[in-house]
Amino acid sequence: MREEIIKQIEGYETIRRDIEALKKYGYDYRIDRGEAMQAVERLHPSTLCLRVVDIIEETPSAKTLRLAPINATLPPFMAGQYISLIVEIRNVRTTRAYSISSPPHCTGYYDVTVRRVSEGFVSSYLLDEVNIGDEILTSGPAGNFYYNPVIHGKELVFIAGGSGITPFMGMIREIAQRGIDRTVHLFYGNRNDDDIIFHDELLEIARKNARIRYYPVVEHPSKSWNGLEGYITREMLLEKLKTIDGKAFFLCGPQGLYDFIEPQLAQLNIPRKKIRREMYGQPSDVTRQSGWPADVAASREFEMRVEGKGVFTAKAGESLLASLERAGIVLPSLCRSGECSMCRAKLLSGKVYQLPVALVRKSDAIFGYIHTCAAYPLSDVALECD
Ligand SMILES: Cc1cc2nc3c(=O)[nH]c(=O)nc-3n(C[C@H](O)[C@H](O)[C@H](O)COP(=O)(O)OP(=O)(O)OC[C@H]3O[C@@H](n4cnc5c(N)ncnc54)[C@H](O)[C@@H]3O)c2cc1C
Ligand code: FES
Image 1: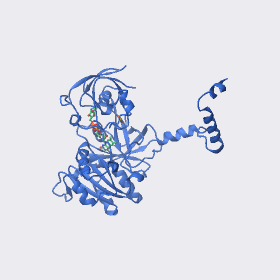
Image 2: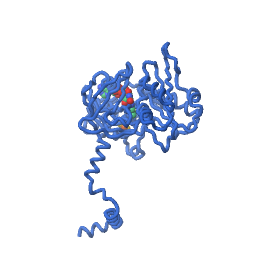
Image 3: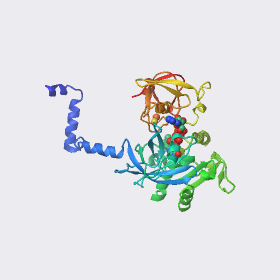
Image 4: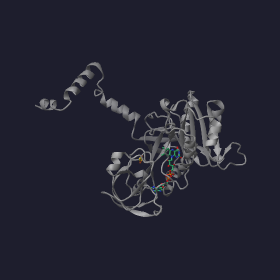
């Protein structure tokens, strides 16, 4: 009887034939589903428990935390990807993304290089309170900011600002240490010369590898500085690169870097597909973003009702994700830049400002879902969080 009913299902015959064919000629993956699942979990774990095995002082404001696995192996990653550190600071559980600055062939550890952000919640904690021997929970490697040989060719222009050097460092170390056939032109902007992370190592790499060209640029140089000064401009790019033809551009840094350099690249008529841009978290001042209503101050407070959880306060200038975390409500989060959609919630009522960079799926937008890491309240709001 059951067999007869199943046969009525549309497509039954085709599926039955496919399964028979797989059994006869191919490989039926259901046989070792357990092993396959274990392999998937090892390569793409949802969380990793890592130990801080070394702390390297890079500059007065930046340190590298070397993180090694506890009782496990590290999943592989592509140079340029990041991990998200999951921390609990004074009863607030939160996450922050950090690019892996070590190269992928160093399989025993991940380096993350953290620069202090003025009054930064997590960067200050990582720099001041984390010690060698501490355990840190992280996500597995994530992100799409990496080299693709099919699209990017062999001539790469890296434009970094401040701590935005970290994904490039993973890529450059991989190219230099493994002798990969690729040319890199690195333009690296910093406010002062003593802010330049990895400066000595980059000079040394460039000295030993003719294919890696390093152009540090300092906005407020000291008297002893004898390199490039000011901002990275299109004139500077043209002077050093000679031509932009055949080159792929990668950008990573704080919002100010993108605001300045993207119009410069546009004037050089570089096709959009030749420019890759890493996201870099939430803007330091959302009220300066285009489309922010002039009559809403960052300090304005609104009511945030969360279905089944209670009523809390949310500040206009702080993402809903941060306000939820302050209230003790933890949503999964990875990029905190509006891209990965891990932190989505349903907006039941109220008005929010959603950052223009947020990648909300069309269907999500239709049904009222928002990315809470990239959404800021403009009125009292009601949310439904899974
Ligand atoms: C893909 C990616 C890669 C990155 N790689 C690097 C890297 O390699 N190196 C690096 O230095 N940075 C990197 N960043 C930036 C990094 O993720 C952090 O944004 C940066 O370190 C600043 O974090 P912060 O918490 O110190 O500062 P902020 O995020 O600016 O912290 C202040 C914010 O924390 C929240 N906050 C403050 N107090 C509280 C509280 N009590 N409870 C809850 N919330 C609170 C508020 O919303 C406030 O706006 C990367 C970002 C991305 C997206
Ligand atoms: S954490 Fe990635 S979209 Fe919000």
